[in-house]
Image 1 (cartoon, rainbow, N blue to C red):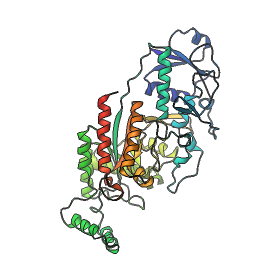
Image 2: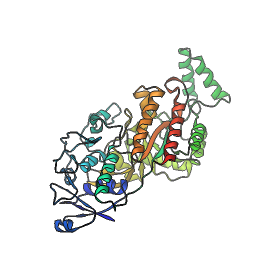
Image 3: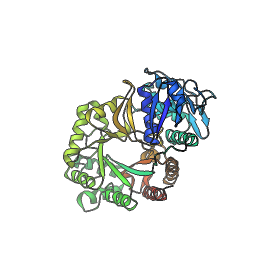
Length: 441
């Protein structure tokens, strides 16, 4: 059954937002109309999105954002309503006291990131500048909660409507920017490593490095079999992102020509989905991006269509325009390095919208909820506190029946230093996610 929506005007921003909330999240088909008489005469499911109601229909008062074409600093006030937080406050005539569609578009399009230019030392947009953070719901997928509220309002008026049945899913993703601690590092790098360890009398590291290089001891970062076996045990979907760019100050990977590293990539690719981990220096040009993708495709023999940016370093909209241009169709960078939570207000994949041209693209953005280094390094949380935070976010995502994506690193399971106990965190998250998936509630 098709939903009829009255609006005074249809725009690309409007269609994009309604397609995501009504189509992707709720599974509804809909039609816009500007014909008031046709709308009023329609006896089926309908609502209006306008400046004022036409009658006694379900009515959502609109802000102007979805009918504009320019980009300018938006005056935003927060409002709390029934465990929801919205940005664009409207009158009491509306069935919601804020414009959920404008609020959603503001988050999905990353509107503020086109305007605010105070970046961190890695040239990244700061999490503390985001409206989601300032409103206090960065850790909640608020757009998904909007969709649940809309579903409740529509179902109460139109019980004949059939909605999409979404399912919770946990997806574990892995960034491989240092496949090995000692193997494949080259004799100069390892010689310097021996020297540093001796200077601080770290004889244990000297012995471990020696046994890995000259003996048969397994490299401490080589945790791939453990990762794959754990995920298989709990039926967790996996995706590995490999860094094969040229080495730089912030790209400290093993050379893509190293035979052992190439064999590792091939082995993982035979057992899991993989993607490119575009280097910090890939922003130099599209040619650099394409070269790195071609390297990974040559090693694996697999077409690469997924990316994550090293250090989560990207800019709106240039980085995603580049990805779209070179043929990447899936990106997994939508989140912050310094804070857990949902950068775009949703846990569900959505299409990148280019505000400069006011048009949607085919590039699908997959938001992640947390990253191990965010919790352990940036937030300086122990394994127990980190686990509690991850499980809380997981339960919120379960409430909206969305995908829950986490970022891990192969060198986070060495069980020493800041990573003590993180193997338990990893396994507990996988086990709890499996339990939530099995319950289907």
